[in-house]
Every structure is written in structure tokens, then in C-alpha cells.
Amino acid sequence: MASLDRVKVLVLGDSGVGKSSLVHLLCQNQVLGNPSWTVGCSVDVRVQDYKEGTPEEKTYYIELWDVGGSVGSASSVKSTRAVFYNSVNGIILVHDLTNKKSSQNLYRWSLEALNKDSSPTGVIVSNGDYDREQFAENPVPLLLIGTKFDQIPENKRNEVLTRTGFLSEDFNAEEINLDCTNPRYLAAGTSNAVKLSRFFDKVIEKRYFTRDPSQMTAFTDRKRFNFKSLHYD
Image (cartoon, rainbow, N blue to C red; front, side, top):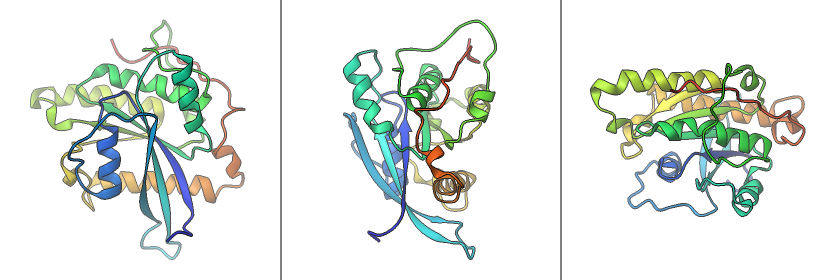
């Protein structure tokens, strides 16, 4: 098992959205009993069977890098996180479905990770139309995961899911909504499990089966993203 090829996936989002609980569930298939704040970065590993059930099936390690979610403009915070953004093959953006600000801040997190030159100091709001084509050109696979789905009142769920649907469109990414304290949301055969497996397969595909894998792991030459507005009032 030690010789398995591996890919690196960042797990980004504000503090308190449940990133550590999510990573534990993804890697251990268990609920994290006593989650704590992540300082710096925590790494866990998941085993993924690429193209499972086909002649091309192969097993890989998925390294999930749970980056601490402290926001701020302090240079020390910025420089510490920048170290974790090297050689990234995929990004999972995590937000709390009951906290609209955590959803809005995903734009900041993605900008910081993809450009490594901006800290998520707050929500970007300005006049103009959001240019989603910026993410359509992004070579790094993204997955959007909303947590605390169980805490949304029944009469508010349609409203919340409509709002998060805009996020999915902007990031050109599939979305999964779940409760990290209930493994059934990721049970084998569910739509969430299928989306998750498809995302990891895409990350592996980009890393190992593209003509120029280096384009998938370096962002220093990428043009900077120009977010003009959000879909939130």
C-alpha cells in the first residue's frame, strides 16, 4: 500500500463549518466525536479505487489537507497557508448551509488557493456581473460541500438549496449537501457517494492522465481571478 500513487486535495472553508468532521467521515467512515479547531493544517488519507469496476481500475491515495479556517489579513496567517497550496490536484470548498457568510467567503478561499496572493479578509461585493467563465477555465477540479443540512428547517430548504445552486454554477462544480454526523449521507450507492467518487476520479485523471500534468499542480502562472459580484443580497 505504501507504493500507491497519490493526489493532494485541499479542504477549504471558514472556521466552524465542519471541515475536520467532514475529512474524518471521508477517510474513516466514522463520525468525529469531539472535533476541535484546526491549527495550521491536518492531513488524512482516503483510499480511492479509480474507475472502479472497469479494466482500468487502480487504487490511489487521496491526501485530504484540512487547512485551518482563520480569516484575516495578517501576513503571518497568509504566509503560513501559502505553504499548503503548493502542488494541489483538487479543492473541496466547504460551507455551512445555515451560515450565508461562510458560503460567500468561498469565493475568497478559492481566490487565495488558486493565486496564493490574497487572504480571505471578507466577502467580495461590488457592482457588475460575476464572470463565471473564470472558473470554467480553471484546470483544478472543484467540489462544493454544504454541511449541517439537518439544521435547516424544512420550510427553508428549497430557499437555501436554490441559493447554493448559484455557487455550484459559479464554481463550475458539483455540490453535495450533508450532515457530517450521519454517515448515511455518503452511503455507497447514494447520489452523494457517486458525486464524491466522480470528483476524486477526475482529480486522479487530471493528475496522472493529462498530457501536461504540471498544469494541474502549479498556479504561479495562472491569471488572477477577477470576481465582480456575488449572487447574494
